Amino acid sequence: MKVIDLRSDTVTHPTPAMREAMFRAEVGDDVLGDDPTVKRLEKMAAERMGKEAAVYVASGTMANLVSLLAHCQRGDEAIVGSESHILHHEVASAAGVGGIQLREVRNDEAGRVDADEVRRLIRSPDIHSPRTGLVCLENTHNRCGGAAVPQSVTAAVARVAREAGIPLHIDGARVFNAAIALETTPADLAREADSISFCLSKGLSAPIGSLVCGSGEFITRARKARKMLGGGMRQVGVIAAAGIVALEEMVDRLAEDHANARVLAEGLASIPGIKLDPASVQTNIVIFDLEGIERSALQQALRERGVLCTGVPPKVRMVTHYGIERADIEEALERTREAVASLS
Image (cartoon, rainbow, N blue to C red):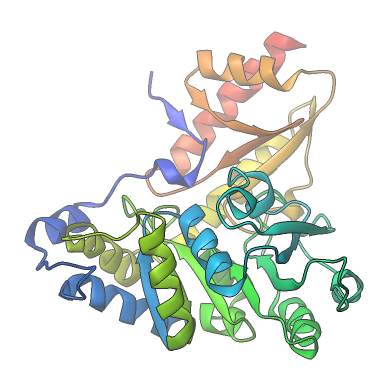
C-alpha cells in the first residue's frame, strides 16, 4: 500500500534537476563571501522580492529569528499575529535567544490583522513599557488554512508601522503560493515590508534553506545575527544549487498543488463527520473540523490506511505538494471515507 504523506510540503524530496545541480555546484567559503552559488541564489532571491539584498539561512525559523534580531534590541517588543508561526512554532526563540517580547494582534480566519488594532498595540514612550521594535505579518498564513493575505492588508499595516517609525517584517515562508493564489508577484506582496523571509524547502521542494531579504544595511545586520546563531556556513553552494533550481523551475507548478488541494477539500466536505467549506481553501493547505470524531482517533485510523496528516488542535491539517498527484488525492479521499466510517 502506497503511503500518501499529506503532513506538510516539507516532506518533498529534491527533484532530479536539483540533485544534478548539487552534484555539479561550484562552491567556496560562504562566511568569507566566496561561494559563487550562494551569491547567485541570494541575488535571485532579492530580485524576486524586490529588495536590495538577501542572506541564505538554514531554515524558516532561523530566517524569522535572524530578522527579529536584526530589527530589534533586547527588551523590545514585536507585534505578531495570534495564530502566527513565530508565536506558536518557533520555541519562543524571540524571547529565549533575543530577549524580545511578543505581543499578539488577532488574526481572523483569513489570516488578516486589523491595522487599527495594530495601531492600538504600538507602545507609546513610557519608562514602564518595552519599546515596540517590529511588526510581523505572515503570508500565506499556515494556521489559518494557508490563506493568502492581499497586498492591501499589508499596505494598511505598513502605513501604521511607518507612521510610528517601526519596521515591518513578513514571514513569507509560502509567499510564492500567496502570489499565485492572488495572481500577483512576490515583490508586490513584499513591497511595503522592510524585510521578508521565504522557504525553499516547502512547496519549492529544495532539501534545505530559506532566504531573508531587505535593504543592504539590514542584510548586513542579519548576516551577523546568522553568524551569532551558529548559522555561518562554508561550502554551502552544494545545497544552494538546489535553491536556484527551485526558483527557476518549481514556482509555477505550485498552481498544481492548489488545484489538488481544492479537489481534496471538495471531497472531504462530502464526507459526513467532516466540516469544511471548500471555498476557504486558497492554496495548498486544507484544515478541517470534525463532528463526533476525535482528531487523534482519525489520524490513527488514517495512518493505519497509509494516509499521513497532522493537526492544528482540534482540527486536522492536510497539505498538497510536489510528489502528490491527482490520483493520490482520489485515493486519500477513499481511504478517509473508510477511516471516518470505521469511527462513526
